[in-house]
Length: 143
View 1 (cartoon, one colour):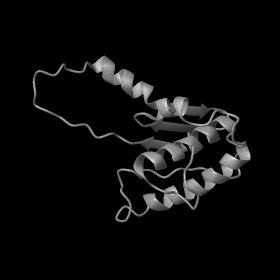
View 2 (cartoon, one colour):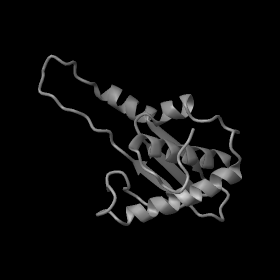
View 3 (cartoon, helix red, strand yellow):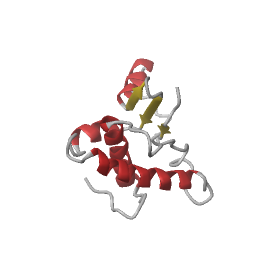
View 4 (cartoon, rainbow, N blue to C red):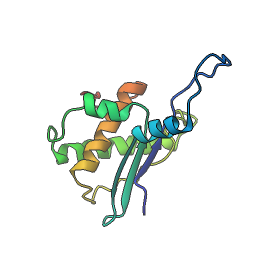
């Protein structure tokens, strides 16, 4: 299965030697990772998007505009622009933080990925820009 995007951003965690803190169990770590992972897949089109980003699921449910607010055409146009800029930044690790821009996104403009894929990808780009104070195009990210 082709991977359109695998976006992995690990939040920074402060480690302390203080033994009075309760230890985190493996089950809770796995549960948190599962809660922070958005997976979109369609076997017939052979695509998959994995977004592993702490806080994105919560932001998508609580802050993003609801599904249906933007048209698919609107989001496709923005996604093309965002993907182009994203991929250019991936190829310039000396100029842009390689911890933010790790992998290229294979988003083909002639493929109809459907509303759900475009909705989640568009909202991830908005979340990313607001969270990391980045600008992936001429449009200011807005909610």
